[in-house]
Length: 106
Image (cartoon, rainbow, N blue to C red; front, side, top):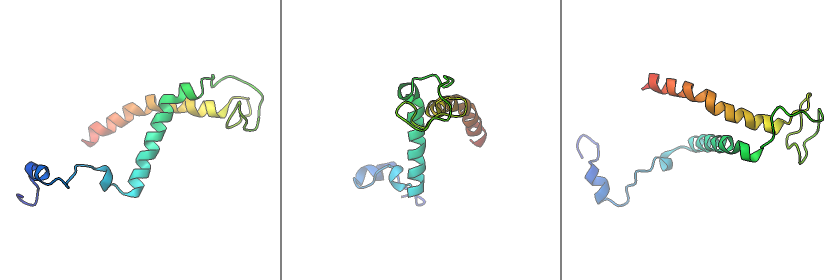
C-alpha cells in the first residue's frame, strides 16, 4: 500500500477482495437503481405491452377492465396506453438534458 491506496496487484493476490460497487450501495440507492431500471425496461417494452394507439377514443370514464387496465379519461382514451406512450417520449426528451448535465458536471 502506498499512501493508503491498495495497489492493483493487492486485489489479485487477495481473492476475498471484489470490485463490486453494487454490494457497497445503500438500500435506498439499490431501490432507486431498481426503479430506474424498471422504468427503462417498461419504456423499451411499451410497444409490446400496449400496442394500441394512445389517441384512440372509446367510452369515456370507463372503470379499469381487461381492455383498459387503468380505465379511460373523460375523452375515452386508455390511461395505461397513454402512460406507456409517455415513457417512450420520456426517453427521447430526457436524453439531451442528461447528457448536457453530464458534460457540465464532468
